[in-house]
Amino acid sequence: MIRGQRVMLDRDLAALYGVETKNLNKAVRRNLDRFPDDFMFQLTAEEAECLRFQFGTLKRGQHFKYLPQVFTQEGVAMLSSILRSPRAVQVNIAIMRVFVRLCETLAFHRELDHKLAELERKIEGHDTSIRACSCSARRRMRSARTWAQLETGTIGEGNLPFREPGRHTPAKGVHVSLRGPNWVFLTVCTEKREPWLARASVQRTLHGIWETTATAWLVSDYLLMPDHLHLFCAPRDLRFTIERWIGFWKDRFAKAHPDAGKFQAGGFHHRLRSDESYAQKWQYVRENPVRHGLIGKSEEWPCFGRVHEIRW
Image (tube, rainbow, N blue to C red; front, side, top):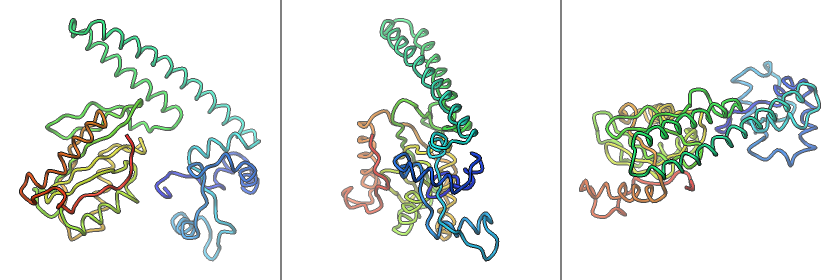
């Protein structure tokens, strides 16, 4: 992981595609318009040195002759279309076949989804059992769409659709929709509800972790109460469940702020349905300190902020 992304070094990809590293980089330079920043970027001197120490990429006393290029999964796929080695050609053919099969699968399910919606309108207010059957069919369609995307390597096997989260107990996973926004409202409490959370130092640490390190899910607006916090987040990397992400930033916080208290295990969350639902929830959260008698007006509460600008 470099800059929050999974990447591969140019020399490793050269070996994978059966070409020399210098020839790979020459091909990239001839096609720079095909490699935007989210497809490829060059390591800084500090990143290259860190890589050398972490993985032993060079012997002691040696240094990189040049700063390596690294490629994201989009860049890896794009390389197969510009390289001329037999292996690169085979990889490119396989990618095209999977893409066409994925498009055919999604087109079929869109048509079926339309027919189910039409059926639901016809039975509105009549047979609830038929409605339950159509909902079950939709769940199967979502599962099939996810498996189709698994073949492209864009979603990990541990991130298939989850059941809808409940209201009274922490849900195991968030139902991630492949067709629309996935905003999640999350509440995390301190252990034994100890009131240590609403402090400027704690806020700075959490904000920094959410901004630079724990970015598999992106945090938008948040508010810290003395014994719990509320935040809105959306998935950025579907290979990471929300539970795994919560555990990750809690662990990073404990290491960065050992003098603070502990968080309660897990968290309470549910997926929002619309931007109107988001606005209502955020207004309710902003009034939380007032309802608890901590301040007179919501504007007076200092422990809130926004980490990432995420559009609905």
